Amino acid sequence: MSDEALEQSPQSIPQWQLSIVGDTPKDLWTEVATWLDPPDIVSLQKACRALNRSLYQKSVWITALRQMCRDHSLFFPSYPVDRMTLDRLQRAAMGPYRFKTLVDRNATFAGHAEDAPDLNPAYDVRSSTEAAPMAKAGCSYLVPGGRFLFTFNCKELVLWDLGIVGSNQKVKAPLIRLAQVQFKAGAFLGMTNGVLAVSAVAEDKLRVAVAGGKGTVTVKAYDLGPFNSHTPSFRPLGKLSIDVSHINQAHTQQVLIEGHRVIIQPGGSGSPEFVIWEILLSKYAVIRVEDPHVTPMGWELNKIYIHEALIEFRSTNLRIWDIPPDFVETFGRDLNPEIVISLAYRQQLLLAHSVTIHYPPLNDEGHPPFRRAMAAVTNPHQAALPLVFDVLWEYGEEVQGFMRYHLDFTRNPLREISAALTPTLKRTFPAGYAIVGNPNLTGLFAPADFSVSLVKATMKAMGSGVDRMLRSVRDYVYTTKGPEAELNVCSRPQCRKRERALSTFKFCSACHLAMYCGSVCQKAHWKSHKPVCKKQEGYSSGVTAPPVRLVKLVSTSLVMLPSRIIVGMCPASGRMVMAVQNLGGEDERHIGVLVVCDYLS
Image 1 (tube, helix red, strand yellow):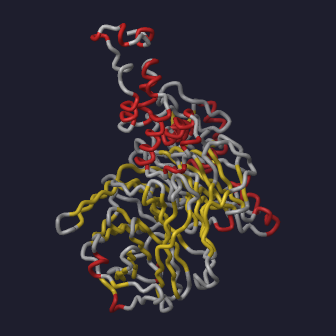
Image 2: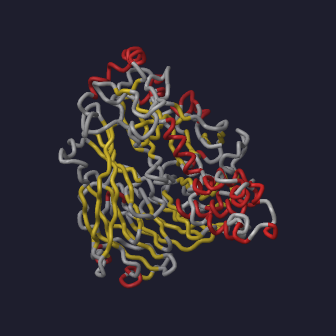
């Protein structure tokens, strides 16, 4: 049927020729949008003009954006839909898919991390000196969606509005303090940096837990909202104080919050106990860990609470504890917020069910001997199974890589845990660099097995001179697509030619990490490639560990400074927030600079 016929009134068309598109109520198309992914809606719009008219409306794309936020656990108020144009709504709903395409098309194989292609922001980078002094690992959080940022420094808890993502705001546009809590002196004894955790408890409400203190660790919880029609405000929910004076070098590294439950290990790695606090019940329980001598991962993100289970990632294995929903209500103690609770042995409880799983190898060859390892969880805020994470490892003087795992678990009626940990792939990073994982609490693992996994690469042979050291530190995103899954790009930085057909470019026959469009580029690149090529030979070929595609994050000249911290990167919106501080010397002018980069327009 022609588009002209579709435009005729129903009275002039025989009943058997009535258009399904034209006669379908608009609210039904809105309902259809809740069952489709945004790319599917775009495909339908391209099918014919009538479908385009029916689907290209604000109600449809607001629904699609809301459903995308639910699917990827994004905070919906990050997008002020009432003020967004139809085109902006469509681009926002397509955000995860657009960023996936951006990374996949730009990332390529590189024998040297520095040779990876650049990923440049879509707009001029914004910078501010307001929030950066507090924006540090563990005490700041970029809310999924990219618009809101929490910072906590034991003096105040602040919610910042960084602006609508992709709106091309002025470079010097100020950050907005949407809400804040000022703490009295001594509220967190002897601490200038604490830890915080954030969880969404409704479409327009967030729940926050903050913790800090020496000798006595204080934990406070707040609700924040509503966002939709009012200026959000903090509402206190309660306080918990824990005595850790008997623990040598006690340091709280992480606090977790999910729903009404807060979990904290107040003594850090110096103590095996952790505390579960049920906020609304005003009760707590002190839990004793049976194997305290096992060392967890050496960074802040070593525990995750998901599906009523606490998961701790360790260097060679992970452990899962089952925490029944009524555990604290049944066995816990009443909380008096004015009394400091004790971790004394007589108060400690044991969880009935737990399981320890060693990281299995991908193939029969087994793991190479680990020199060090750390886990990078790609979707900690999504609370969805299977949980996907990468274990970064180093198994030689020059070679590093990672193994990707899928973790799933179930319980029987007795709540005994049955877990499956499946290795899915193994990849190798370029040699000659120290690859360190960047915790990214705002990462996600979607769509279609795509994750934004951040790493920091530092040249191992730095030589002498501060300038060379500063130039050698970069941030990268890696993607696991093989050479047959995406059109490849020549590894020589001066070329960057793209394939016209899949798998027509060839890898370096020695290291199997760099890829060239032809012999001319291979010979021209050999002088810089030679020093690491032979060191990588034998490690990165065949089943041992194929290479990984890299793309280099470019934001500003400050991106290379070693003192910068990735506060978070939201792949759904393409926004990265970075703090640069504590440089000292001649670079003191850069102390406390917060950098906001939008990679999607």
